[in-house]
Image 1 (cartoon, rainbow, N blue to C red):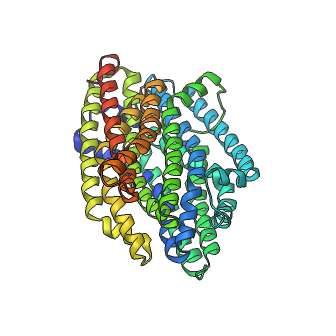
Image 2 (image 1 turned 120 degrees about the vertical axis):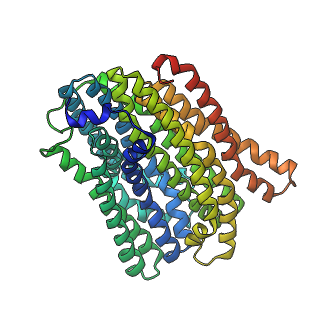
Image 3 (image 1 turned 90 degrees about the horizontal axis):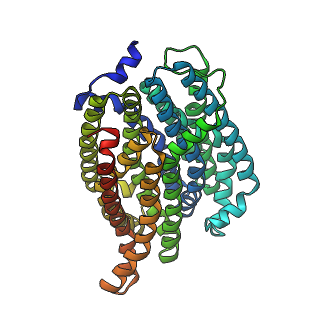
Length: 461
């Protein structure tokens, strides 16, 4: 057993496991900061409408970028299992095949999005005042869509290839490029012009994506010391379908989350106007930070689970499962406490001196953040079954959690608040914020049921 493989097979202490997944957590977290940095600059330079516009159009790009996440999480779980079985040649052939297919899909999606952009924006509920900003932003983002997919894709495979630190390095460089780009293109060159502000933010983001998507591609094509290399593809439709099935939960999680964002944006646009969308945009950014931390942990732990499952090492599986749950709960509680304490500072970063927007954002953030206490367990549960190559259960947890529970509570809870706490828009407004808390509580119950049901099947507990 070589040194790289030996890392996958070792028995981790709680501290060592956290240190092992930390680079992946930071990599996913930094990748999520692209849009947050864009939002800070655009909100303070371009104003509320420009800020609300990029929040309204961003779900469209996240839905398509989720294809890369699906290929990455599902494909790395399958390939991690194959590596555990000792077939490195097959693993590299499938890795190459998945990569080439993803690039082709990215190009096709970019062309279709360019052609049908305006109808799609209208479908998202983009208003006449927001439309010029959304189009200006999208026309720059669309050519970078394939790179967006590749960045998410390679984060999973760099961990599987036992190079999580490289994934972090690439993301740090990309993040620095994006931040510097925002500072120059939005902070200096936009000169208060809202259209130039959103265009500058888009250019800065694409610049970061070039680094985050292309550099890993070059690395895997070059001679390297990792477990994976790009070269001759092993075209296998069944394996591709298996990988997509494995990663479907992550794909639908992102799609469902984007759909829910559209619903929230539409509700707040109706109830409050642009300031409601802007406030939810800030809360959404904070939510993306926690989601990135939780997803990064799952991506970091998944190759270990897939490998030990493929190798039949049940002792390691039990150790990983127990310690992972402990870390997930600790991360959830810590994140909730920290963000509650920093709610005013976070809100002020996006309110550009608007007292009303500041208050709306703080109110929403202090309520929404309570959901972080519950989000970690469903995220881990879904990722665990993906690592076991059980896309069916993983998909059920993700889809029911993000679409069924969220859609049900966002309809039911505001109505209950409206009738019980005052029959006013204010009561319904608070009900919208609380709906996600109840949704995640239901998701925890569902996840625990599945974890108990399958513990003997996979022998992780």
